[in-house]
Length: 294
Image 1 (cartoon, rainbow, N blue to C red):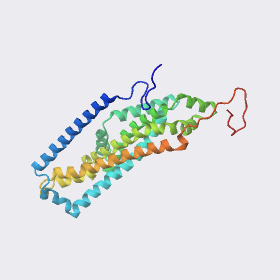
Image 2: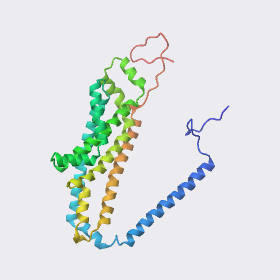
Image 3: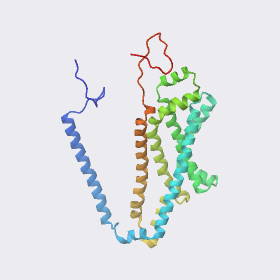
Image 4: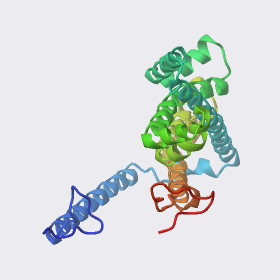
């Protein structure tokens, strides 16, 4: 007779023992010390190269510089808002085409998804901006939408296909059409599986908005470049990076936190929790709404 497994263990891995836990603690302490040493070395280099002198941080006290940064941040958020909404819509359309029962529609959707996934996003942005002579903001949004929409299409398709096959077959056995099966059965159950990947791809879209400065779109990175390239401010390149980078990191962390919050809310939602119903006795007919007896 085998001993019962620990509560947090799985069929493949047992709960770590005292020696393993001690070894993991040592590894954690060593890793923490190495990271702190790396951070300390970077801070030392910054002080050694006089990156914290008042002359290099003085430009950020000017109202014009602050307005320039705020305007660039607003343009970044605007481009991200348009690109994220359009990418989700395009991804849903392409995923629907890939899941279609009509072969020509499925082939066309597959061709578009594979083409835009393989094409570098910067090439698409430049092509739309230069060849099609589109304004910077629409060109940036279009390039981000085509690339991220094609990636999200695969995320949606994988999420729908990850739902247990029996759910789909049971829905069809009840006489539901495919549209109803997708809308009321497959998509709601696949949302929880898709959500972390969707947010991760939106984080990629947010970071890719920085490519707008290559086509003269006045986004956040472009504003920092204007400040760093101004000779009157003694080229404060590193201070500009130290101001812009935490804001980008903060926005990405906010999206990740939102994904975690949504996942927890989905788990607590009673509509998404399974309800245990006792099976009916063979050969019995029950009135509608009356559960079977024990």
